[in-house]
Structure formats: C-alpha cells, structure tokens
Amino acid sequence: MGVMSSRDALNLARDRGYDLIAIAPNANPPVCKLVDLGKFLYEKSKREKEAKKKQMKVEMKQMRYRLKIDKNDFDTKNKKVKKFLESGNRVKVEIWFRGREMAHTEKGFELAHRIIDALSDVGSLVSEPKLSGRNLIFYFEPTKETLKRLKERRDKDGKKNEDNEISSKEI
Image (cartoon, rainbow, N blue to C red; front, side, top):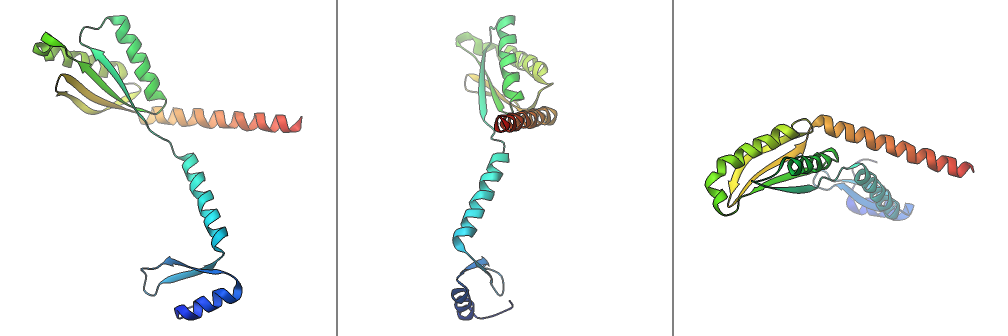
C-alpha cells in the first residue's frame, strides 16, 4: 500500500476490520501488514507444529563398561549401543575403574579402542577417550548412512500407517 503514517495505517486497518501487525519493526521505514490476528496466530502455530513433527529429537544414551568384562557381556553391551545409534541417539560410553584398576588405565584405553572398532560401522567417534576421575569417557554419534537408513525406515512406516488408515475408511 506504500509508505504511510502509523495513524493512517491504524485507521485503515480498523475500517477494513483487520489488525495492524509489525512484520519488520527494525526496518527503515517499519514494515507492517493488515491481517486478522486470530487467523495469523493459528496459521503460525500450525506451521510450528508441522516443523516440530519433522524435527528429529536426539537423546543422549549411556552405556557403562567395567575393565574386567567377559566377551559375551562385551558383545551384548555393543549390540545395545548399536541399537541406540541406529535409532538416531548419541551414546556416552564410560569405562569404570575400581580400586587397583586405576593403576592399569592403559588396559582401559585398549578396551575403549576395541569398542570403537566394534561400533565404527554404525557410529562415529565424537571425542577421543579421556580420563575423568575414575572413569574413561568418550562419545559416539550415528553416522550419516545410519541416519539415512533411519529416515527411510520412518518414511516407510509412515506410508504403511497411511495405507492402513485409507483401507479402514473404505470399509
């Protein structure tokens, strides 16, 4: 509508039954729009909900290992960490040292490198193993390929749900 004074814009909005909303108040001159405020807020909240649906929430999971761990326990914990990574979560891995085990931290680093090698196909190492008090800590996050497979799986599941809804409506 062009450049006009704020009074003229308010009068114009009242005459037409709309609200005057400042879209870019810091611009020179400020940019305003004539809109029905209720409808504007409703559409804005609807867009935000849609964006939130598509957004992937990433959680931090944690797995604790002991220095003296048997092969079967090691494999079981690694399977669980793989599940966490395949579902799109980050994983914090801790190796506990108890008592005299603190004298043999190099064995903890060896165990950490075994874990890293076992999980390298689904996760990438975010931070190198570091000693923090009596624990050796490092972090994993899913690789891009893992996230791509997860997205494809979710899209496939979403299509199945839509097909089920359609077939139930037809009945």
